[in-house]
Length: 73
Image (cartoon, rainbow, N blue to C red):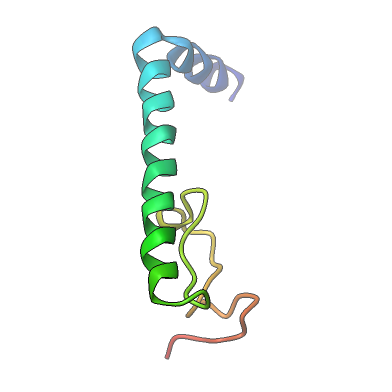
């Protein structure tokens, strides 16, 4: 496991990979901002993904039985 973490760290430190990850985070922030603008132009009560939440499978949000309490049927 230690070798895997070391290999991943070396890969993440590669200039091209590091630049890609920075660009990826910047793009995700822009997409989150656009989603928020669109959602809030409809209503302040419309929820929009933040911090890349739309891309994660964290099990929270509408339909998952998360903090809002709703469940997809």
